Length: 503
Ligand SMILES: Nc1ncnc2c1ncn2[C@@H]1O[C@H](COP(=O)(O)OP(=O)(O)OP(=O)(O)O)[C@@H](O)[C@H]1O
Image 1 (cartoon, rainbow, N blue to C red):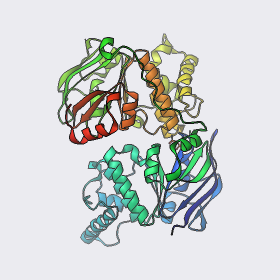
Image 2 (image 1 turned 45 degrees about the vertical axis):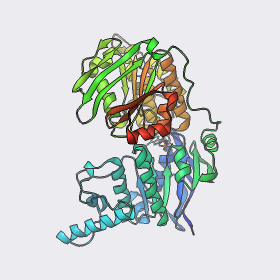
Image 3 (image 1 turned 90 degrees about the horizontal axis):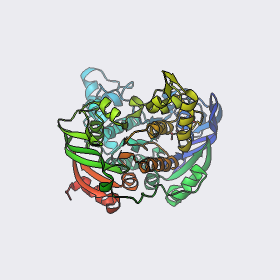
Image 4 (image 1 turned 180 degrees about the vertical axis):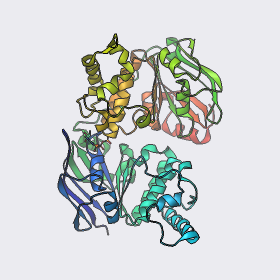
């Protein structure tokens, strides 16, 4: 029988100028998957930082297994049995799986036998997760994200965790890896371990969740809803305070792409070991989606079109002119923009204002004789961040105070403002809440309607199918199908990922 393991009551946390948590309650039982939902900036990460000891609350109580506690740091929380698996996993790349699992708390034997014992114990923990096939001697740096996640979970088990917090664990996983993650979660909960699960993908919640707590503006607006009996519409209206709207804008009936003329023409693009013989076109005003698993070459293709990687053979033409291969400068001059997948490292300047980060790619528009017209820059940034409901709305704030999803919105906002003829979007809605996703889709469609060509890469197949006019399905570096979006469905795309039968 499950019992209450954790009870948080009236948790308050303020940062200068922001009340991130304004009296949150959360109750978690042993062996349950408790889903924490809320829009970007609602306070989810702050709440789990309080729970994991990374931040001290200003007010409120935390009762763990019947006792009032206040973990001063993550190590103290860990000693209680609370572990957190962050999206940017905190593993040491140069060490082995076993060394990472036992980092800081090695088995107490010495020398050779210590190493053997460590490998054996690591294997036992991986087996507990249903993944005895992972070699504990292998270096962590060589492993895919899904396996790294398992190493973090094995580490949590090695520390006798009784509650594991998972912060958007599916965001870095491919479609088939997500079912693997769910099997691991079932295994954990069967052993009585509780899981707090954060995700913006509401369809996952019904599949894996037991109960739901919804946060809105730093408060828990609804607690302990049964996941199986709560509709997506209910959850969305609790999160947003609005009724759920249709996520995807109508496709614009207009001239067929072949009548509009090609804006982008990619011919016979190859990069050894990444992709082969990639040819496709994008018309003015057209959205072309690329569906492919992680590792299928989808991001590499975008980067090669953008000149950040040099093709072995093949070429790229924009508006009838060949772009010098492997030159980002040439691509940008010709009017291309790329919103990259790895935005933390590639895209934002943390200490600069939101306005400046957003207007960066369009700066020449606000600059005269070397002077930047700050009010104009800020007004333009505010218009686009306002329509994406970016929090906080004050664009003079530095980007580093934004929640993860709001940082994502800032990157997308930048490219929506940038005046490109061709926009390449790599996972534009990762970590973005449902409401803001719909806003991003609407703005991308508006841009297309104004004549911009768009190439969209996303792991979310419904997003590729819902937003694009035309879809390319990619498997192991080759295009295995090209189709108007309305003539292909999710099941067919998944079949193509596996079979790769060309049509
Ligand atoms: N260190 C900080 N300094 C100032 N403000 C902060 C800080 N950390 C978070 N905030 C603010 O607190 C609020 C809650 O942020 P939090 O990261 O908890 O949201 P979240 O629900 O996890 O969002 P997301 O879904 O985007 O990850 C946001 O308005 C954010 O800007």
